[in-house]
Length: 178
Image 1 (tube, rainbow, N blue to C red):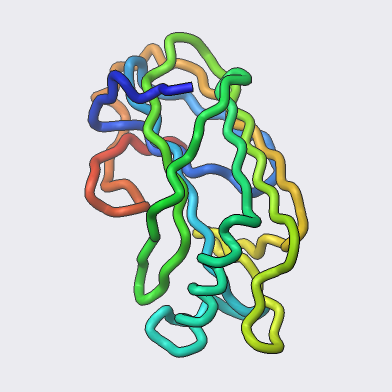
Image 2: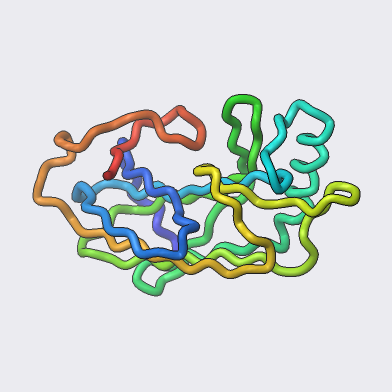
């Protein structure tokens, strides 16, 4: 499904949850939806700086393992295909990023998010690697995580929603949700 013909700015920033829980947000009407997420490969204890030898090796292991990671995002059961050609950089750390901007919705919608890892876990020599979310959550390899986002339309005008630069690239203004 292509949901990107009529995009507007600012968009509503919706980081894809990896919590396995249900989330609810009220969003401005007639506003583009900007879904995104990022994962970094690290050790059990931490994500090493991507400029370090260990960080560079783990990042490359993540790139190779990306084909064994899958995202399924469905807006009212219609698939949304995420772009997987981006990276997330913050404070010397680099992660793999997935994103998609979609047209606004006209009615309340349910967004199902499924993240799955399969096959061999990325490794760094003898150490087993761990996936980390942008929120600092460890994501177990070989798992399937299912989360939902319920979006309802606000009666408040978009100008009443707070804005900031989006968290993925820090280039676009987005509405923030609480």
